[in-house]
View 1: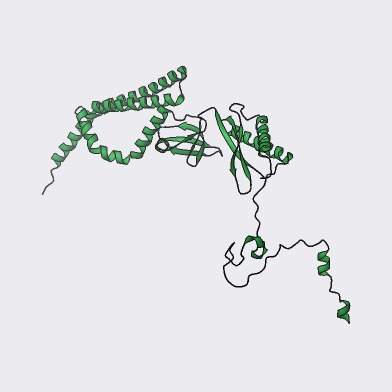
View 2 (view 1 turned 90 degrees about the vertical axis):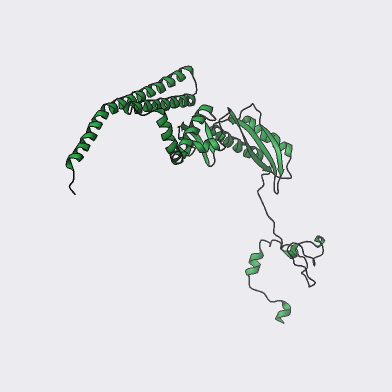
Length: 331
């Protein structure tokens, strides 16, 4: 069978002719898309300048500017496709999106979710750039809110990049949502100490700290009767920034420790006393019954004995000296 070179060459010529006829339309489409891209950037810059002039929040102008930019670019792309391919109609676009929409949706699900969540965060403004927030194990200052993720600078100087989808669908604690923030710390005093005296001393220390806000007023409340201490909770207010709170806490705890010690108020620490089974008192009950880990039984049980007394200062010398004979032993 002989190959038809003439027919093949005619096919190549037809393809080249069609391509050359399409090139002007492609150039026009590219010019249209480029023009819309430039127009979108100008529109975003105009919205930002107008928002700054009116004093609106930076997050709001970011959201409006990005939405306007994306919308204008999409519109320019559709017009460019129509210019390059005159047979292309909105009905063709709908059918194309219907066929590939499911696949695209699954492939870019996380990207779309983070994008929409970022837009909602920028519009609703649950927190802003410069706020100090805590999300799960991350805590720090919001550096930037982008359409995909939010950048947080942690207190130890690291950067956490959190997807906007997680921020929008989970609980976020905004530490700087209000001008002031309350701090608290539990102080344990001895059971033999005067509660009201310790309370007044701690309150005086709180009022003397410069970083503590006078309004709302600081207070001290009794919160627990612990195993070793009577727990008083000191509560005070400072500015909501973390640095202000840490400075105030350092000043308050240093002063509270000093004034309580000077006043003779005990600050006890956990202690334990260990007694052997034969070191308990007779008044504890029947020593043949199971108690304090001692097994029950009818056999003999040791009599209680007192804890060993401390040896006199010269006992070690007597213990190390050689034994001496008594008169009866010498005879």
